[in-house]
Image (cartoon, rainbow, N blue to C red; front, side, top):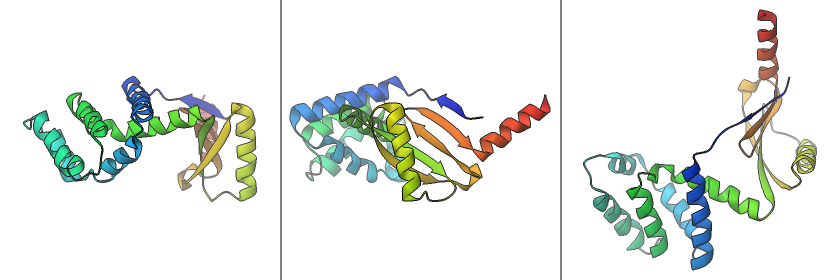
Length: 182
């Protein structure tokens, strides 16, 4: 039996993502790229610093200004966006915000990102079949991303727009086990 599950997303993450899209368009600045750079350099030491309850938000902001803005790695509007995330204690959702931004950008362009999880790498032919079927189902252009996971035993799992279509052998095995336990 194939099951479809939806996962809720924090509402504020989507709001930040939409705001980022609007700001980037209004100011014509590469904010997404700059924030990806910030995310890449967020190491354990910086995360512990940001989590520390006794360090004031102003000190945390000063670090971002010194490391990124003063060195011309980010523009002022990106710095202010980071300040907002720090003030609201949402800086730790930066990756989620950027992921939601990418999905919103794709939505604007009529593209949906679809992840296929399988035990082995899919052939080009299988990838094209999945793309064709998903484009028919969603009525949008599909960007396929593949993930390998041997724990599903076989079959595949398709993830898109917070939905999951689980056609894995692991799911079928669990369904059979539940059925036999009745």
